[in-house]
Image (cartoon, rainbow, N blue to C red):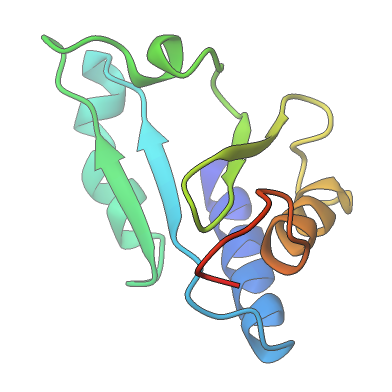
Length: 118
């Protein structure tokens, strides 16, 4: 159920913020199919204002295909916009620590070399 997912994502967001990891952007990409578009308002209502829900247009190229990802994947970028982790199932389940640890590494470690943001 996507409500459980969003509750866990919001809990993770708050936990990381309380640990000092701020200015992280969270974006959920909704499927571009008709069924998903009809459920968009439920999806949008189930998340906080701190999590962006992106609704794909049926006519545009699929975001997941463009990013070489799949539904339920987590793509974690560093502050320079470089992909640091691409987690697919089962590693993307929020009941495991993979997503949290990947965000912490992307946030805290100087993965991208000399960077004006660190």
